[in-house]
Length: 208
Ligand code: TMP
Image (cartoon, rainbow, N blue to C red):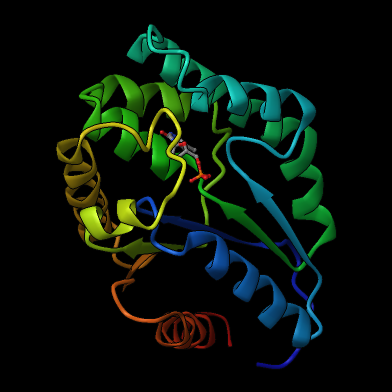
């Protein structure tokens, strides 16, 4: 892939099940693009702002057993609203590629599909998204049980029953069916090198 001048950043999000190797893929993507001399900025959702990181800690803290699903939805939206205003809008103007470790699809799948907030979650997500949509979303799908086994210290969300994680898998697959041009599913049951190869192929096909 040759360096080219982009008018606005290309926005890539990486999604997936717990323990699917998402962080490794985000690192690989960023390094691969930087090697091609593109400017790249990486964020995570929830997080990447002071306020967002505090909200993230609240959301993932296992002690917050009483958190209602509505509170959970609103906190994810709040963290994202802060990320968009404080970081993303500026980054879209200043970088060739902006990569986000999770974004709004996580809310559609985790709170909408797996927690059962459905249309409410979808509507609420759109209200604060300001029309931002990724150009490419990579979804890593692994066997939910195998993925969870890879995590030593589980947070509040990871600690949910296997049935929740099974619903996540179905949710992502359904989303990908609806938007095949944007959402690319990768089988993450293989080794990291095979996953990286798939990522490279998707990138080259879409952005060359
Ligand atoms: P992670 O970034 O390490 O994957 O942790 C974020 C956790 O938050 C993960 O369990 C997925 C979950 N999540 C939601 O439930 N809804 C959301 O909208 C987002 C962005 C993440």
